[in-house]
Length: 441
Image (cartoon, rainbow, N blue to C red; front, side, top):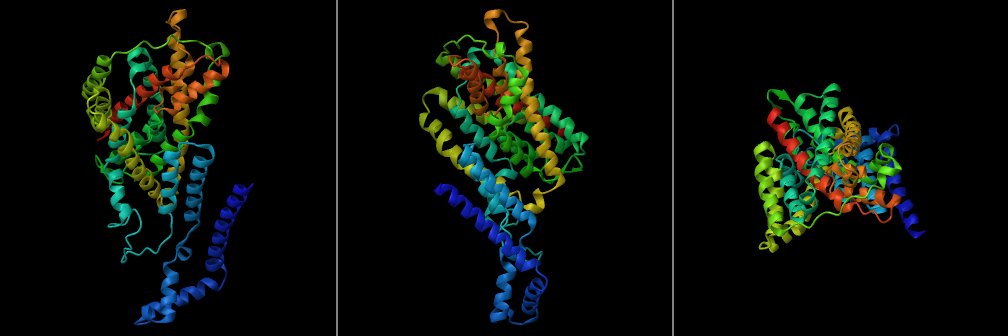
């Protein structure tokens, strides 16, 4: 009860501030008085040293004076992200930094062509601008992949390689989203960056958008800066995996299919675990050199883990390093969603395409598992629910598969099977990003 009262109090304060802002600058005569005060500052030779000038200058720099409805909307979005993370435990390690970043990026402040307060993420010299450099130049995503590689166990994939096909099938969402983006009027580089949302892989989405949709000129084509909308869409849908995927999984499978039991994964030797990341590194980067920064770091992290002689480095990569980079990535991506940049029709279209791509990717993995079962003997069939883990939201999609499977058979544990397409989905989305870069850069 007390927590509810606190929540009501907090939102009441926010509403009060919004009303105060409206009263100060929308009631007839009030805004004129404030403007007159500010004009007095400009007209006075030593305006900053008089009481009237000081008050006018203070008011002109406050967030109340510079706030727009867009700022308030985005702050509400940031609060909503934090609420989802705390209340429902939806990817809190991502949504809390991103939600806080959205609030930071939408604190209104005075902006003028001749004055640089060095506050906003898009203002040269600001702290946020320097931190954002890691996003714009694609520095943070490979470091995230290094940590993921150091914490990933590829045993389930090594023991049952055919499940890799489910991870590949789920990537259909990427290419259908690309086609949809082209149809809606985005140019080719922008469509390529938007398409990667279908892989449900936040770092890959940020990496590709930093190359193809960063506001620069790609092959003579002027692109928009879509890093913020693409990253927020990708991470939002990753966080909503437990909400989005189950209805699709139930729709496309029968009760009989949901209780299919799969053979336990075989035991994988240490030698196999060491050889896999080395061969995977060479093979995938030869196929798609553009994915080298991502896949190179992914497999490097896994080599640190499986070699057995670099425990300290592996621990650093999967703990301290990935935590630090996650904080910086989340806050700066969130702060990049300034109202004047983010609240556009293009951002809305990106969110719609992202939702559809996630649905298609989930359906692609489930349907392909059903197709594979047509060619498999009775004792070797795949539970189609496992196909939903083909999207690369690791390990959340695998957990959703486990949860759904237990609903229909409390003794049927699918987690280890689901991890195979889940980690192959990470590899697949990175390969797809490299392929798109080779075509579009």
